[in-house]
Amino acid sequence: MTDTQEFWDRLANVRAGLMEVDGRLIPMSPNCAPEDGCIWFLTARGTDAAKAAQSGQEIRFAICDTDAGLHGVVNGTLQLSEDREKLAEVWNFVAGSWFEGGKDDPDLVLVRMTPKTSELWLSPKSGMVFLYETLKANLTDTQPDMGRHVTVTF
Image (cartoon, helix red, strand yellow):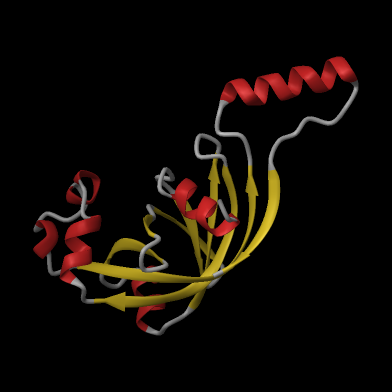
């Protein structure tokens, strides 16, 4: 599996991250779509994320998810999308709690991030592997194998 494939595979299990827009960190829930090479977000009209997407702004999305074994930053461009099929695909129960009108709420905005580069740390997804590596390192006076540090260009 390539580093890019592994990124998409692990991102599918990430439920939250921080989108940096104009120096502010905004909690957002990513929806991964490796088939189109994009990360999708749902937000409200008028938010910093929606404004950044409207202007095609470059942003960063930070991920720190131990369960997915994925830590790092993804750099890319935001854009607004009118794709109703994609909206239906990424819509979920949690989003429904924010938008009273559901998928047809006039305040709902679909935002697409097109990743360009990322710096990632791919760590063991299993707590048992982490425990084993830590124990082994302490017993053998060596460094634990806690994964890889990679740079991915999309």
